[in-house]
Amino acid sequence: MRRIRSILLVSLLYLLSACAAAAGPSKDLKVNMVDFAYDPNSFTVPAGQQITLELSNNGTAVHNFVIMKYGNEVVDHFTSQDEANVYWQAKLSPGTSDIFQFTAPDQPGEYRVVCSTEGHFEAGMLASLTVVAP
Image (cartoon, rainbow, N blue to C red):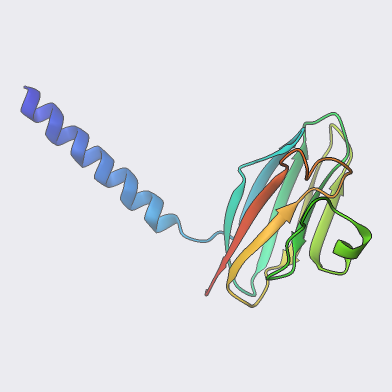
């Protein structure tokens, strides 16, 4: 009986890992923004493709979903100098949701996502957008 359970458990884990690997990049993202966090906080999208992003702001402040250009990082806090390095952005008031579309960058790599509302980046409101070849 114990051996059968072990075999079933291993089989289930194998099946789940295969499903996760098969998921790959997505053209549809759903992100919940709360005070100082994105949920989920990492995303994988295909390069150069149209992406649909459903954002919900369940926090108590205005939140932004700001994708920085490849190789650009916000250092201490988001400033007007960082605005020149923004690839794409969306803004939501508290308690609202909306659907946005943008074209993923053509260059594969990891892009930083930050909230540009004052103090939010410093509080840890950041995420990672991984762009992969389609």
